[in-house]
Image 1 (cartoon, rainbow, N blue to C red):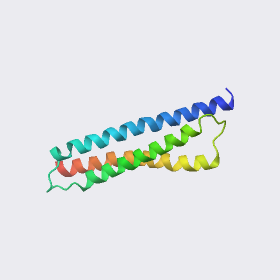
Image 2: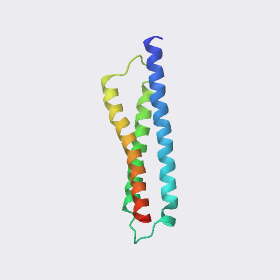
Image 3: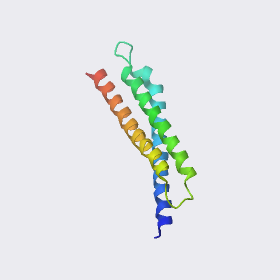
Image 4: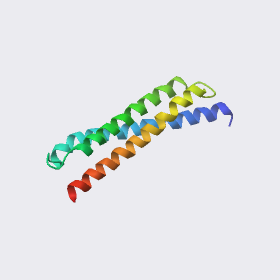
Length: 114
């Protein structure tokens, strides 16, 4: 397999990662917003849920931005340094934002349950 095919496979894999993560973030935002009023009373506080929605939104924005960068670099044999410097924070923010949102929902659930 030559370098161009390897780079194309790498870019496709990254694009799929961001695509799946943006789908998960969108679904999590909708579920939290739809079910927040049913599972949380004002006395329990909604700060963790609001923080989770903020984390999911940040991860969604980072994923969409990173997908746009990858679309513009699809036909190239290599990624430039500027492109990799833009993709690295997008990769980190999208992953950490999603995991952080899940943890915040877990914290809220433990707060309500216990």
